[in-house]
Image 1: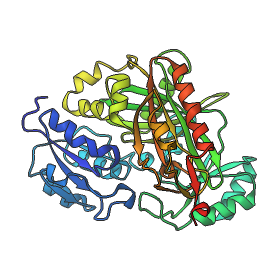
Image 2 (image 1 turned 60 degrees about the vertical axis):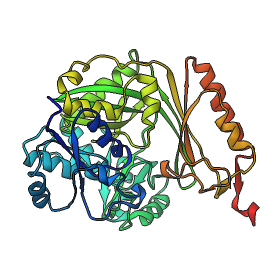
Image 3 (image 1 turned 180 degrees about the vertical axis):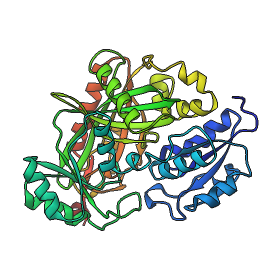
Image 4 (image 1 turned 30 degrees about the vertical axis):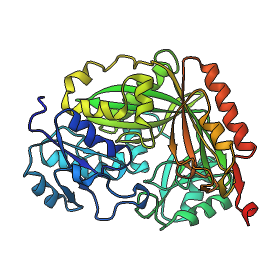
Length: 419
C-alpha cells in the first residue's frame, strides 16, 4: 500500500500502543485515537500526545465511533492495548478492514473462553473454570484432584492478583480478595478464574500475523518467582532463533493463534513448556506491554511496534518473513527488580552502581535515588526493569548476579528505617 491518504484507528493507544502513532507517521500514515471508554484505566496515566492525532474519538458506542471514523480514509483499526481488543475487532469488521472478526473476540479477552477455544480446536489448554462462588471452584479442583491451583482475575494481565493455592482454605481466601473487585484494567471481576498449576519453564512469544500467517518476532525465556501475595517477574532472556525448544514453541503458538482466530496483527503469548509439551497460559491479541522498543531494536533490528505497523502499511513485506527465523544481533536479557518490602531506593551509591553495569542498555521505570517502592507482588510493582545487551551471555550472567547482590545489600531501605 502507498502511505498517501491512509489513516490508522488505534483503539486505546496506551502502554506500547502509545508508540504506534509515531511509527505510522514515519510511514506517511495519520492516526485517530479511539478510547474504548471515557475513563481509561489509571495504570495507563492518560493519553499521550493527543495533539498528534487527527481526532480523539471516545466510545464505547461502536455505532457512534464508526460514524466518526467514516470521515477519514481509515485503512486499519487495531488495538493499542489490552482494553482495546474487542472494540478494534468490531471496528475492523464494520469498516471492512483486515482484522480478526467479532465471533472470537471473547476468546481473546476472557481466559476461560480462551481455554475452551483451544480445546475445541484440539490445542492443549490448562484445565480452567470461571466461578461465581468459592464452593464451585473448590469442588472443581477436588473432583479433578488438581491441587495446587492458580487463582486470578479472568481478564487482567501482568500477574495481577495471581495466587497459588495449595488448599481449599487458600483458594477461598484468594476468591474473596478478587470477587466483585476491580482489576488493573478497570473492569470488575464478576467471576474468578481458577486453573491447574502448570509445572515447567515459562516462555513468551511475540508474534505478528498477516492474512493468517504468523511471524514469530521474539521468543523469551521468562522466569518468575512466587512471592508472598503474588508472582514477581525475575528474568527474561531473548532466545536465539531455531533449534529446540524454540521450534516446538513456535509451532504450538501458531496453532493457538489459529484456534483463537488471530489472523491479523500482533499477539503476546505466554506458554508453559511442561514435561509433556507446551501449554498456553494466555494470549493477548495486542503488542507486548512494558517493553523498551529501542532495546529490542538494538537486539533484533525490529520490534513489536515496527512489525505491527508493517502488517498494515506493507503486508507483503511482513508476509515474506513468515516462517523465517528472527535475527539476533546482540544477546539481550531483562532483569526485573524485586523489592522485598515497602520502602525506598537507597540515596547512596547503589543506584549509581546499577547504572554503571557494563551491559546496561536502558532502564524501564524510575530509578531515582530515594524514590518510594512497594513490595513487589507482580509486574506493575517491580521498581524497574534493566535491559542488558552483550555479545556474550557470560557478561549478562555477571551483571545479573551483580544486580541481585545490590538488591540484597543496600539497594532498598525499608519504610521502618526512615521513621
